Image (cartoon, rainbow, N blue to C red; front, top):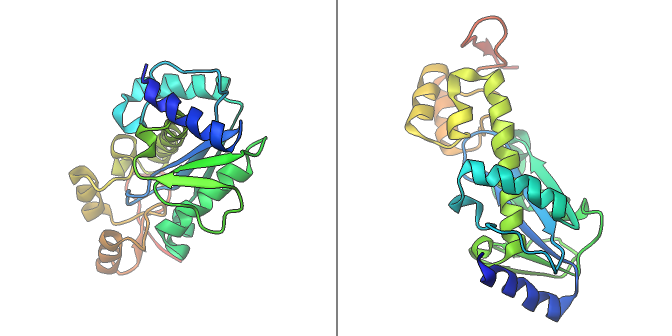
Length: 224
């Protein structure tokens, strides 16, 4: 068990109050799908074995911890913003929006919020933020797991609508396989059209947008 994760949370609880929420996001970098943030308040007396930064865990381990965290947390919530929001307000502002949403939706409001990365603007709760907090705070690590698993599952569902892209494998990141699919089919409705690689492809396809699959794979319809 990585005790330092819990020691840091204990220090912040002693300084600011009993209810500490960790906040983290998943999905800022992908070319498709939503950005997802989670907020988690863990009981001070609970230490979940194996909890860590979600990027350091296998999908199987993340999935098991996802269930344990939801069962043992005092409160947890998830916020998300889809591609249309990301394209309208940009990925950074969309991420902040999901973080505010996740904290607001907690069933009990925290005394202190620990954020991975930067401070959340336009946020009324007391907060502290620092880089790589998901590897230093158990609560932030728990939030990173909830956000990552939630987003991965959404992308697996998206694969059922758009199987030609392989979203179940790369989860929307710009992998070589994803790039090949984009070159063949063009972007679909869940691609982030404000992202430069998608903008370039969308321009070359002259506004052609792949919609939900219909009866034959790879059906392409003109966008509205």
